[in-house]
Length: 202
Image (cartoon, rainbow, N blue to C red; front, side, top):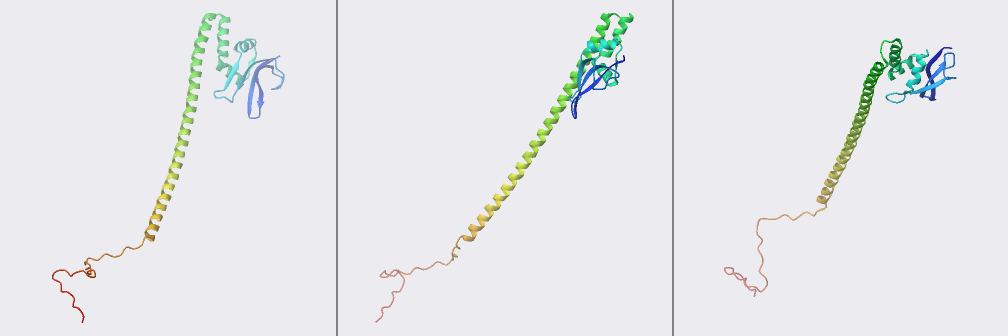
C-alpha cells in the first residue's frame, strides 16, 4: 500500500484550514486517513504550521511520500533535514551526537529567523496603524479648522451688519457754527457799560 503524507481540507468557505494526515494514496482527499499528525492554517500571517515532528519523521523513515506542499512544510519545520541526518547516522557517516548538534544549530537559527519575521510583520502593522491614525487626526483637524473659519466669517459678517444698522438708526447731530451768538439781556437788567440805553417811548 502506497502511503502519502498530505493535506485534508477543513473549515468553511474562503477560510479553509487543513489537517496534515497519513493516508492511503488511493483514498479521496478528504476521505479516510490512517493518522493525523498536524494542522496548517494559511489564514494567519505568518501561516500557522503545527506538526508532530517525531511522528512525521517516523512515517518518512518508513517510506511515506509527502506531497510537494507538505514536503515544503516539513522542510520549514526541519523534519526533512532531520531525516537526512538520521540516514547519515544509519549509514555510519556521522554519529547521533553530531546529528543532534547540527539539527539543534539549524533549529536555533530558524527560530531566530521566525521571531525576526514576526517582529517585522508586527512592526509594519503598527506603522500602518499609526499612519492611518495620524491621517485621520489630520483630517479631523482640517475639518474643525474649516468649520471654525466659517463660524468666524459668519460672526464678522453679523458684526458688520449690526454696526451698519446702528449707524443708520442714530439721529443726525446739528451742525456747529464758528460765530458766537450774542445773548439778549434779561428784562429789567441794566445794559452793560458803553451801551446806549434804549429810548423810552412817549
